[in-house]
Amino acid sequence: MAKHNELGARGEAEAARYLQRAGYRVLDRNWRGPTGEVDLVVCRGSALVVVEVKTRRTRAFGDPLAAVDDRKLERVWRSALAWARAHPSVSRGRDLRVDVIGITMDEADISHLRDVR
Image 1 (cartoon, rainbow, N blue to C red):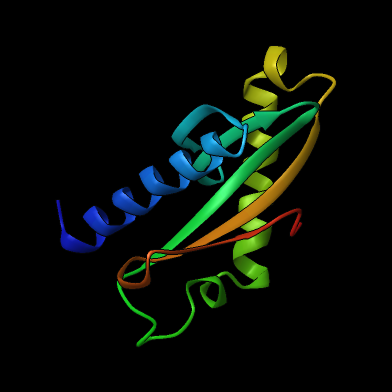
Image 2 (image 1 turned 90 degrees about the vertical axis):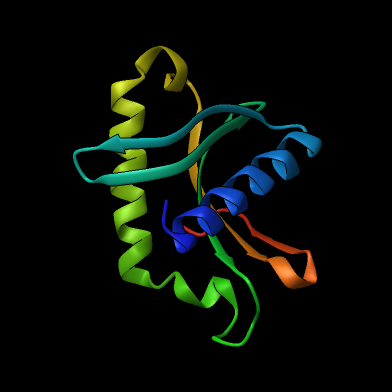
């Protein structure tokens, strides 16, 4: 596995742990659909949340959240809808939203933006 893929996998695992500590239940990881990949799908209460995770080793190339632009959010939203359609028994009756988690490894920093789309 390439180093950037390893970093991404570590970040996604850290994001999943963070969300579980916050009371979310992880339903899916790295789901590939017709419109792209979903990093994490979690739920808590009536919320069904598709989470885009961006991980950086340092802030030398900027904040990880800055890497998620409007075009990326639109792709994530389309993938969230595809996931929900593919899993109707889980998604029915839930409010769908997209969150973004940015992780900077050298600072052990996690930023969580809720309902960005």
